[in-house]
Image 1: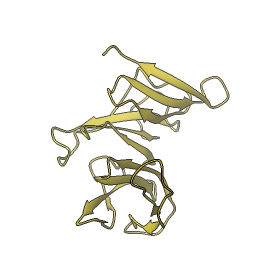
Image 2 (image 1 turned 45 degrees about the vertical axis):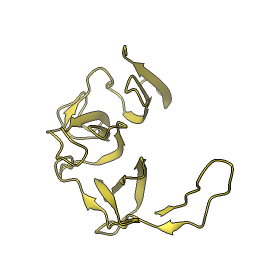
Image 3 (image 1 turned 90 degrees about the horizontal axis):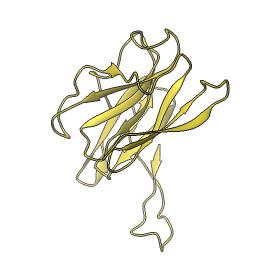
Image 4 (image 1 turned 120 degrees about the horizontal axis):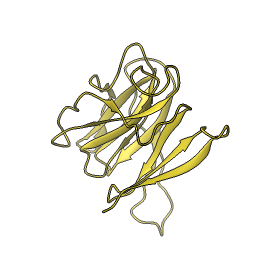
Amino acid sequence: MYLATRPNTLVEFGSPSEVAVPNSTGQITCPFLRDGVDIWYTANTDIYRSALVNGYYQQGQPVSELNDPSSHEEGPLLTPDGLTIFFTTDRSGANTQGQEDIWTAERTSPTGTFSAPKPVPALNSSAGDWAGWISPDNCRLYMNSDRDGVRTVYVAERPR
């Protein structure tokens, strides 16, 4: 995975530099950059985090409290404050075994450990569901679902 930055939207991106190399081989997918503080991504069916230390992203580490060895996790999506994460998994305990559903976990500080993950019943269906983007105020979550037989973008909203 590579990262290219720019100081503002009026200038071109600089040359990319390699970041967040996982501990094992495999394709890196679903990268999520949280305010330049860390990068969250999926590799080898697990969620990883690469922290920014002294201006460099460190080698990615698996987020063990979110990963289930018997399932596939992907698409980590953190709220802007870093206290809540949404991700997609095919683990049991949600709507349909074998289908991908959106799960969430919380923590009390941006550097703390997440609570045990749990499914989000209001977002999940009997089809595949994937989290995509959450608004800065945490009131709108855009997601994909194939509940109508074709992958479609949905938005879930809650009051401010």
